[in-house]
Length: 371
Image: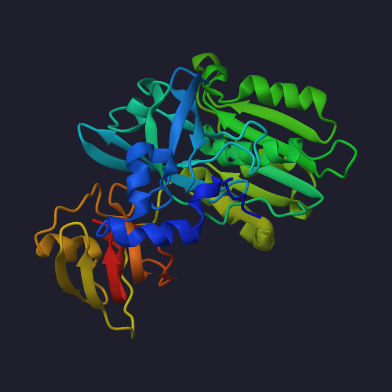
């Protein structure tokens, strides 16, 4: 179950509701955010308390969440908003901490992408005290409770990050209680690039239920030797009977999916991709709707298959964007109220405060965006 943050006594609904008429058009919550961003529940935020290098290119940020944080499940990801040159940029990162961390801190591990605008700043130039915006935890790549008795985890590169949240969650279970048998096969190019290497090796030595098998595709600069499904079968003979979680590069995931499909055990395979599918609009029998852009005061009509990014731009609203194809999460915008449809899957989202990708979302009725 998601863990709800502890709230101060004065943050109760009756008190804030009573103050609302004094603060209109802003809310009392908005003014609390001016005092301290972590007090604002409408726009959840977190404060970086420490940055811990993992490799030359990866850094773990420890974040104290504010009043608006609603918790997460092991394996989920969240959107992080960081201001660069006055503009708010959003990116998504897996949570590498358990749902109930003993220190109360969230953790994400950021890999600095070569030529990137946001990840190098987060990984190498985020001092303690930096305030980041927090989106809600999302994703179905999560650990069930109770976990299955036998687990196989296949990861490569930064694909280890969501799985690390699961492993740390399992490690916090009472030592006398039942633990699943867990095998982690993790692939990186070299030993130096293995994120969490020391911690994983320590877990392998200390936990009887956990086995860690590292694989390096270019040890010492040698020619590439990728971890193939055949290697997986040799290292884990009972892979068909295990519940499997896989996260890594697209080529690896496609090979894994094909191997599990050939064995007709795809129902046991859970896959997480860091890159979304290309933009593929779906027709819908639902009409569009009227869109209000709250901060700019602009209203516009939206068609059922027209991305909200285009609706806003055509109406003269300065919309944030990146790749315009649902890959980079640069267009994330809070949904104030109403319903939107994901143009890739047809799913309807109507949760107030949810961060939506406007480049791949369309109106499914009247709605308002907090922009």
